[in-house]
Image 1 (cartoon, rainbow, N blue to C red):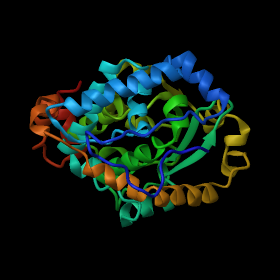
Image 2 (spheres, rainbow, N blue to C red):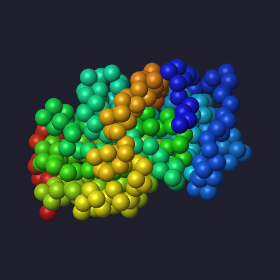
Image 3 (spheres, one colour):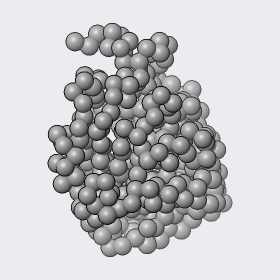
Length: 330
């Protein structure tokens, strides 16, 4: 699989003396998908990169930012080459990281909590399907909720997203998610408070340049449906449209190609081996991901973006029980 990232960090100088020259090296499947779905061709790509780099150079509030094609293309592709919308997405991404550093900065695969969560197999990258979409599996029961709370869980997803975005295949093809809720308990859901939900869902909805193609969930427990409904009040209509609920894992796995199914789901993939390979991917890109923290924006200018979130920053750590009372949910 292609990746523009390496163990070397990228410059965050907003006006570098020269810019890197981009060359499209992915298979024709992605070239066609980029053209048909994202309006991308060589001419539009170069024009858009030039415009976005000029905008960054002149931006009064952006102090430091990556300007390499690998980084900027994720925003251009996310917004289908609307340069103004891509610029807005970049602003929001930078402001989000600075506003909530505890969630979105210092994402280190060698951090003991992150490493344990990945080694426990909570999430596994299974590969690409025949249409070029990346498939990710989450097995929620493997999440040690006695040890890891919402912050660690959110940071796990943030680290996963940042590392996946280094793959151009994901920028273009997007990804599909398998969520297996088999054998989960109330504690898997009840520890998330309103402020946690709002921060996390805003990142997923509007701040990370990711293309969700489909989110498949199976065996979601009835006792947690009200909590899921609360979480989805913070989801965009577009994201909600991509959620598919299945009664059984058998029904869910029928939506995916057999070559992408783990052995425990009747397929051939060794999830432990896949997990080791992904950890190696994280280790190879550790410096790249940590160097994202070197980017800087005048965060005070963007405080109003999260003003509603800030209203519940002082929420007591009562989890969802307190959250329902605060929102007067019926």
